[in-house]
Length: 386
Image (cartoon, rainbow, N blue to C red):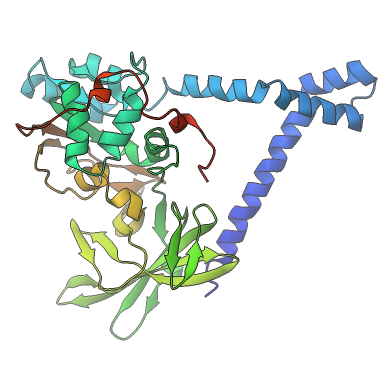
């Protein structure tokens, strides 16, 4: 099936164009041209250009700039908007002043100033290990107990998450990964393509298009689909209208690998608040169908988020995306009625949620959660990410 050749080719071309634009900017920027002219008298001298570019990389200018950009990025983000203000007002009126909040570090100053509550993390973390453990043990944690061990070490009473985490997933999952990038992943949106909808006498097949690289080596029918080397290009979701109810039938994905496109069954779809599992072997991730909003037009099934197998088993997916009740996490605030999870004018929006955290009586906290050390120095290594 070659339905996605065109979009796949365009994206590959964009990557190539991006690389060339970067090289052109490096080569013809005024500083570089001035340096070359001063050295050779000819701003287009080939050997000088090569030497100049090499010196940029060799002296670490680009690395230094990227580090400075990352540091600056730590203090940027969306504004303390109405959604946050309403939540802050609710917290001030309903949650004790001595409460301690846990969340991804971006929101620390907002919770401290707007909510007037203490936080574990913020933009000026006193302990360098906090972001790693927050990303690893809590957000991408594989169980509630894994999260609770870290949270208890810091006397956390409440946990907060918001839809921004979907876009930030590559950041905190990479920071929370081990030396082999075990938690690193992403959740790109897929969009319903009405032109590719297929209607038969008794069913309608909806097509969602997008691109999501495979986030871990996957084998299907003896064929390896390597992480970063293969990608999901879309989903086909067959449906039937049974007595006015939309019933989803066995879905499948289109996956590109080694220049070919293959159909692979999808084992799960999350729709209308329910996790629907299909009796078929294939991709173990889950397509979460969400509304698509463009101006005043709303399509309740207009978009989807692919939650890979790796993401699907995390605390963030269970608690925030799939609304599963936690044994020790009690949902106390959820503004989904006014801000449902959806694709709004091309970006993901969704509810702000707060859980009250409780602990089992016999919970033991590992000592490393009290220390400012990383469990493995290799977690800071960028090699092997792709």
